[in-house]
Image 1 (cartoon, rainbow, N blue to C red):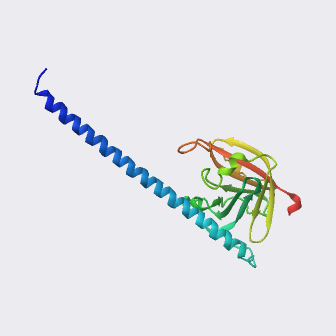
Image 2: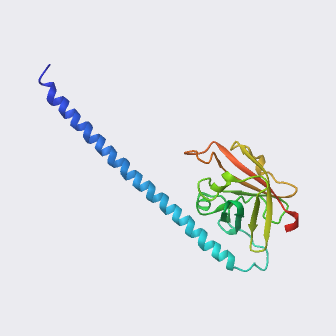
Image 3: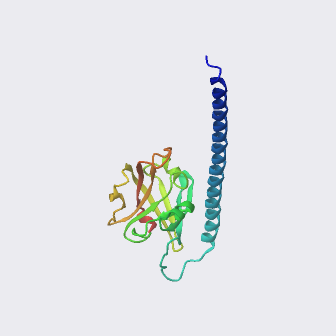
Length: 202
């Protein structure tokens, strides 16, 4: 064995140890940052929801129909059996969906003929939908009035399947979120809940 190779091997081992230690420190710091960011986003969304629900319950109906702008509050969505209770805003931007459920602006407004389409993240406001069933009651409260729907169908579709967002000839409600619920990263499917307004509630 060449004695000159021993110092080289030792130096190489020391450098490998330093590199591994540095990588561990970097990953630890990244983990702390990710947890901190997730905590901030979580707190921001829940504070926003609490404040907006209080404002919504205290606000009187407007004297005339409003023209909704991006980010305006549309109402409050509830699925009583699942404990789902979330503010709905106009639009589906990243900022909107971080704080609330989003209403697709091309779809109908509650009370209009057509399909009211709402989208939400599977890891926040729409996570309870993993346990929804056909026949479940859904409530949508606006400043003008309350609407009640009953779930008629649940399906999983491809992200490109936009037929679920098409208009209808009735008073329908469609909830859309990503699927599977426990998937890590961008989910490959969409979870769709279709409901029909209860005539007696009109």
